[in-house]
Image 1 (spheres, rainbow, N blue to C red):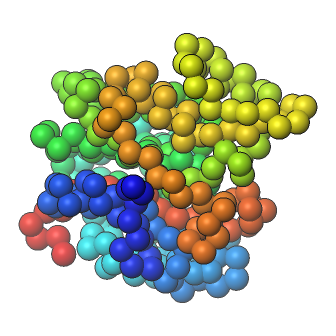
Image 2: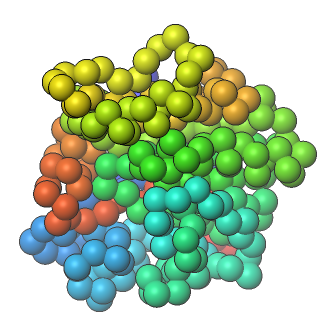
Amino acid sequence: MEPFVLKESKFFSIEDWTEKFPGLAAGFSTKNGGNSNGDYSSLNLGLHVNDSVQAVCGNREIFSESIGFPLPAWTGAEQTHETFIRKVSKEDAGTGALDYGQAFRRTDGFFTLEQGLLLTLCFADCVPLYFTHPDSGAIGAAHAGWKGTVGGIAGNMTGVFKNEGIDPGEILAAIGPSICEKCYIVDSRVVNLVKNRLEDVDKKPYNQVKENQYQLDLKEVNKQLLMKSGIREENIIVSGYCTSCQEEYFFSHRRDGGKTGRMMSYIGWKEADCS
């Protein structure tokens, strides 16, 4: 069963988690229901693309109301396809929410133990990773393109949880909507980097289609890396949605030739006064 459930036109919710853990907000936006025009029509949530900042800020206001998490509680990142994960607290709330220039530099993942803070990242084909340990309240979010994936951002996040005394076997992880292997063609350089990361696995997440061209299943690569880091397979849920195939829901950097909007992954525990 698909774990990301369309709740209204604007977002998918990780229903397996949100129904089981009251107060948890976790999901992924669609491209629909906003005010942006042209290539960014309509719910573009990326402040770093060539869309009107006013339109994007308006879209973020709309989205915050839809998911019930106020903008002053959001945190945003520069997202440079690296592997740094930043631990954030309530005093970081609002950073990068409406101004990309104030987003956390060279950051591709967030971790927090606090409520009332929404971890947000933007996507247009890369893999959104979500993490939660409900007993402690720890949550994490990561942006995994191919560079971050082979760089080990999935395992880095598991390491952050371990540093807080959390057993990886108790972590729940979700892999969100992202480009599927049929739509994602890479060269042997990228595949060799994947091979180096997954030398000892039986299931190969790539398939050669032409000379120096391979279909690469980035979701599966990240799933295997999560398992290698100690997260149990039964604790990992994976979306079947493809951001490139399913144009009715998603922007896609590859499909749209690079000029397109961004969806947003989000995860946070609501406080009693959040509405």
